[in-house]
Length: 142
Image (cartoon, rainbow, N blue to C red; front, top):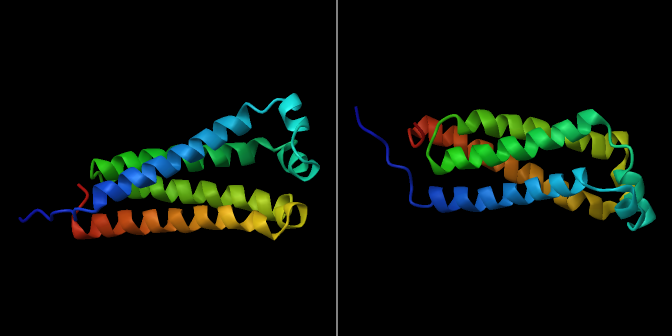
């Protein structure tokens, strides 16, 4: 049986994705640690989007960023379980965006610019999932 060799770009891409996901972890921690005093310093439209976030939306955010971070570590180590965690991360992202766009209507609340970052997050998550599936299929991940 032959062993497929992963392309040279896989590890640098996985490292870049890890940094991206660590930025998400940082955003999660900042949101979690936001005090009423900090919240009061935000513009009114942002105050509305950060106040009274339900538990399930916070849990979805946590699942998205922590499973995405672990998935990237697994990609770095060429572990096939990365695709499972990429799937979990994408599911967390989609639930979180349901809250943002359906429950609180962030486009109406914050304007059309509120769609840029969430769209980028979804695209990157889909690309990482596709990469991990391809890596499994081609034998790059063991």
